[in-house]
Image (cartoon, rainbow, N blue to C red; front, side, top):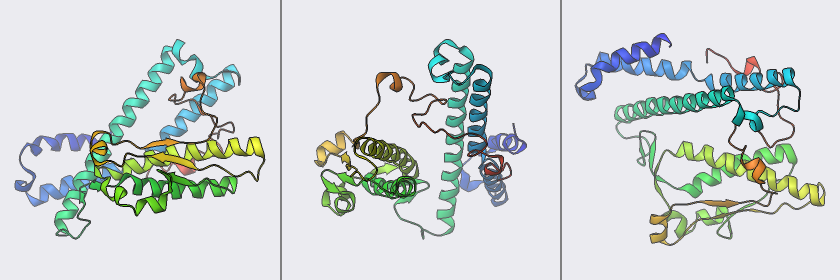
Length: 276
């Protein structure tokens, strides 16, 4: 455990009293300590990803390329232990960074006397509009598609192009409190995978110049329905997952991408600065 985290745990004993009555110096010390922890571990995600790649590659070198960890993990307790540890690590990391970001954002709001976005309470956007977040994620995914495939599918929401739907009255009524940055990353992964699946199927069946069908999104527009079921349903025109692939989809050591990156060319030491 790092020294900063030990100091944070020790300092937490004094935080049973209201934050406002703590001495200013103590508040500043706590703020600087948590900021240092946040920044010190900024590159940890890439370090762990690099470790997962190295572990997988080492086993492949030992047992051959036919070894697929996602298929044998049910019979190997050690693989299950590794995945359980990774689950716990990412959950703890996400929780700690979320709490630190939230506290810092709340304190920043006090210092700026409400000059920030009135919809923001810490890191929570009280009026998160999911389709607006989805549109931002689509723009990022579209850039990746144009970069890698020179083509990208459109995104339609309830039959309209996403940009048009955002301007509708129904879209403006679809909001709820949420950590909108988390929602962005979720949407980005979903849209990115949907776009890739649609493009690869279209090009496989009809050639490189094939027209790629749009990604379809359905959200409830009725106000009462939205309050009961705040769902965003996304469908692509890819080949889908068979049950064999579906059973491995959430394994850390599985990817449906054929040309998987290696540690050397994608997750290099230079990409994971430990001091970041």
